[in-house]
Length: 411
Image (cartoon, rainbow, N blue to C red; front, side, top):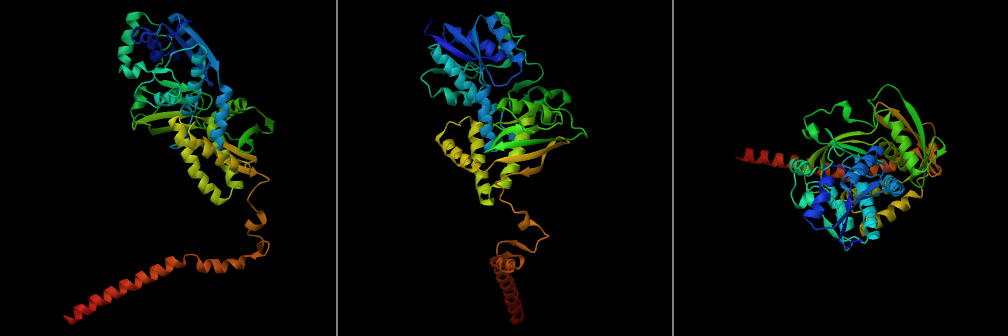
């Protein structure tokens, strides 16, 4: 095999389709290997990529990485990972995809790694954060040559490239096991109200309700309604259940890594449900101080995940803390699907930092030697400095007024 080979992140869409001949014509590669990584996309996307690769006469591989992706998603649940309010999906998938493509490239003794990302988005950074740790060249033709969609279409038509099979239609869609993102077209106008047609995973909320019990083992969801499931099956099942109730829609103005503010729409039924359940269980079994500190750790984890930098030493340390807290996060949470919401309505755990007797209004004492009356001393000290400061300030103000008055009388 030629030693002038490049492995391309291949979707069969317009960008990656025109990238194939560009890698040969403009970058001098003799052979392009297309790699499509399965992280839970619809089967139609693989068929599209395969058909386009055949039309381009490109050696093409479809690699299943759903198990590795699902494992990462469970880590995201333990970290309650959201960015600006929505569950991370695309951001978590890209490093998995990048690492898988690099493995294929290494197997073929390739010299380069290429993607079709633009210079305005996040994905270029997420791919390259992984690839630039290797000795292979990193090529980004769309970014490096400042290509526009119009130029790409004209280029493809001149060369008879199969862009029809890679037509994205009205909206630009990216799907994986955890989320479905919808952007482009009229959605780029922040004042445009999205039509119902953009949604595929979620129905319009109705008056129907449904309960589901989710079991966690050390922070990891392992069963639904008592039935043990592997991660992929559990997430897929919850996507269908929660989606039927309209759970997991986000319409937001998102701040990208490069500083651009963009309008994004997402669907993430299972993610919304699992995150809500996990947070409910954590609030039941972790102390207030642990919860407060973990919130800052979770936020940093999500930031690094959004940037595609989960392989950093900092994240290793964050994971060590998160994993330690999760030893207590075992139990069940009942979620009620209602009106587009996934609402925790019950929780059970042997590790609960909770005493019904202590919390109840119907018991005289609290626990052990502590009684209600013991709180009187606490109440007296609570806010003492604030009251003292307020009284001093009040007397100072009165003194100032009196002094002003005295000065006026003397005049």
